[in-house]
Amino acid sequence: MYATDFEYDGLTLSDFGMMIGSFSSPGTETVSSGADINFHTVSPAGSDRFRFYGTKYEEAFTATLQICKSPCLSDNPYLTPAEISGLQRWLCRKDGYHRLHFISDSHLDIYWNAAFSSKQVQIANQTAGLELTIFTDAPYAYRREETFSWTVRPRESFSFYDTSDEVGYNYPLTVITSHGAGNIQLSNSLDFAALSIQNLTNGETITLDGKNKLITSSKSHPDLPSHFNFHFPRICNTLAERKNIFTLSENSVSCSISFTYSPIIKTGL
Image (cartoon, rainbow, N blue to C red; front, side, top):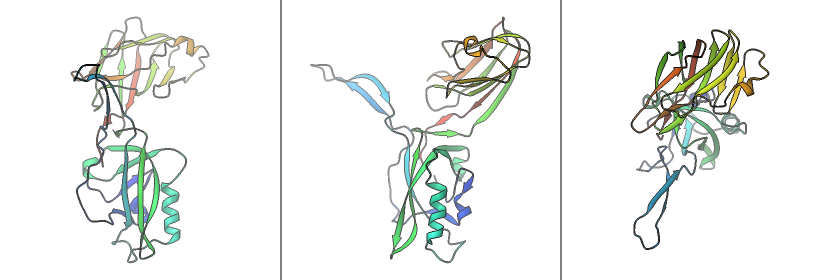
């Protein structure tokens, strides 16, 4: 990836008169690309072959980069204490992860949830830039989230194509609005169980946050936990199949459904 600027939590590096640079000679290096997996294998006694038992991501994606003043915006290449303070106040925070997007033609729709640590780069006893270490919340990146919507009636289906690089499943933010009073049961051709919510009222909107296992209603529904089977909708893919076919059961009421979804992408900087 080639980039001289990035956006972090709504502000860009160029907003501070800075750019991505390097204080060392260019060279070849190996960087993580979001696919660093540890393989768990065991060799039985008396055998030279190793049996495969599973995999696990051992750590989240990290990377290091350096930033310096943009020569187009300043004649002085060195940072003042006030400039260092402003940069580190923006980047080096203790309030969790924020969205990081590199402004590059090859990464237009790719982001990480990231936090930073910082060290100063000294030249002739003056600060010429900062070396930033990026810490993320996952071993991979995400494509920018999109929202997809459908209106379905009983026994009708709609399809969704999972573009994720990770074989398995992903929880979208799901919003369902009932077009009548009754129950909703929604199945997925690639999932083992169906979503079930009972005793909805006309116009009731249910929000299902599968990542955090939260369900809320736009109306008073005190028995909602007991009326929900706690199977949050999932977008799935296998190595051979990416097409998810969702079907509303014949005993359901008509409804509007939307998924807000960020597919996984395995890429590095």
